[in-house]
Length: 112
Image (cartoon, rainbow, N blue to C red; front, side, top):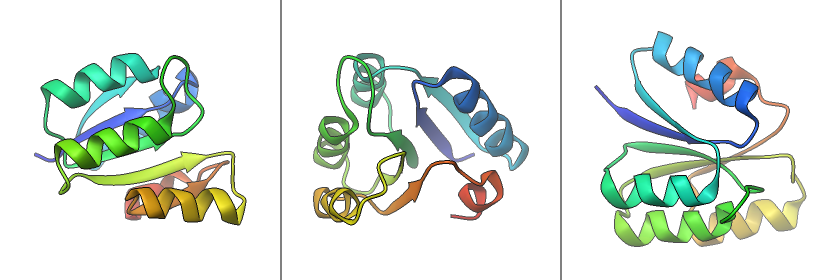
């Protein structure tokens, strides 16, 4: 079973994402702030990280760099309200595999 870490500080949204991904058969772990996510990333190997950028304690840009440093094979989908071209390009330059602008379509997220 593929392991997915969802890093999202909006608790209701993170629960919805988890529900949709679990229905598709994924093993999903939630983290609601950057510091918790960092610990999980250091202690576990994930197939995919769904990563918000604006997080308490450590931001998503920092976490993206850390994820790619620890395991370059881990796929990362950024989910952010920041949809400007500059932000999307920066995310891809740091190693993001995909970038989705909020509000999210759960069907689209599952397909990606």
